[in-house]
Amino acid sequence: MKLVTSGLGCGHTFTNAYGLPMRDPLSEFIYFHHEMILIRESPEKVMFFCEIPPPEGGQTPLVPSFRVTERMLEEFPEAVEEFEAKGLKYTFTTLSKNDTSSIRGKGWEDIFGTPDKAEAERRAKALGMDMEWLPGGAVKTIFVPRSLTQVFDGRKGRRMWFNTVVGMHGKETSSAMLADGTEIPETFVKRCEQIIEEESIQFKWEKGDVLFLDNMALLHGRRQSLPPRKVLVAICK
Image (cartoon, rainbow, N blue to C red; front, side, top):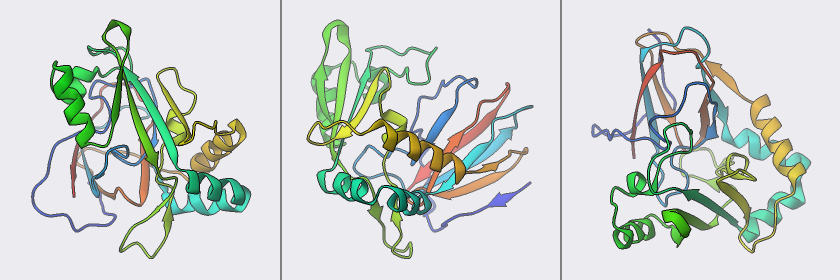
């Protein structure tokens, strides 16, 4: 068993929750992210426990977020500061019911825990989202403005790459752009994707492993794997 820690200090109350759909196919890569980054108060700690390690693949890649900022500033200094000043806008479209065949298939009724549109809007607003209802029962959630980078207390003043531009830009059900509606250049997004991959290290799971992450400082994801794989997740402030 390995016990790996990064930024411990949470209390004794753990909340079982997931920043991504719970029924995500193991054949799909969960892209690098800070857990629940789109809501107003993201959890500070993420904890993993490996109950069943995969027979092949399924590693959890980790990336120091400040390193992405440093390298993007080296290559795109003017763009980074411009995007930071303008802020970001994300959109994400979901159906009413869950689509279990897709990694992004969680329906809005499940996401907000209610089939009532008015209540869903109230809960969305509390999380810092706007909603636009679409034909057929789908909804577009809108997150604006959001920052490109952030500096958090207790992390040596490092500027974290605290966004999900690569993960949401130009996707079938999501988008990432500047808050004023300006498109983010494809060259910027692609190079950022390359840098994140280059900076990643791979955590290979063994049965009984426990991994503690500082969600403010580390991006994480999940590589594709063969079944079975069961890694339990909990989050806390």
